[in-house]
Length: 187
Image (cartoon, rainbow, N blue to C red; front, side, top):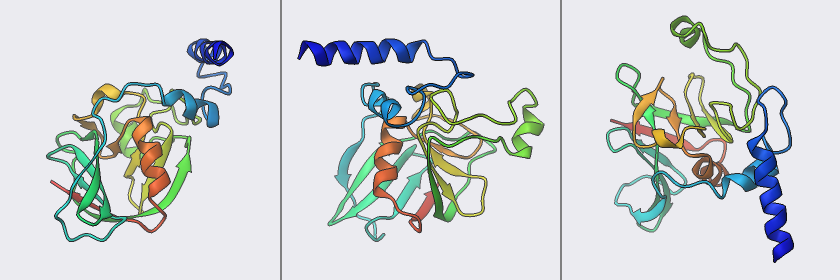
């Protein structure tokens, strides 16, 4: 037991000193996934009653509630807290998950760079990357459901249209959802 605690303490200590420019084993991959288990949950996920008509495996986002539901079937869904698009960037409609990536790299779209020319043109995947631990890409749109290195933004309208989740929650959703999953975004 003492040896396990020492290994965890060493891992945590090494992860705190990581520099984004010098990506190490604690920035992305299995060790980073393990470290995310111990982060606090801004809005805890929970299984709730679901009365919708959507098929099991469907993702439903309520931007007004700032919640994402993964429909389980049998009258149940998993509810996650999310961050959504700020005023002028919210949207609604149906998309399909067309691609999934672990610790994705980030290239801000031209529209975002026009608003924020100070942003980097490319950022490798890792703990400091705005896309977080996982990303589910939504059709041919610029939108994604992705992790976040800012868990305090869950329950807020702060993004440029993407649906943000804690890294812990996006890993859970990523493991459940498949390419081809229907995603419904409602206001």
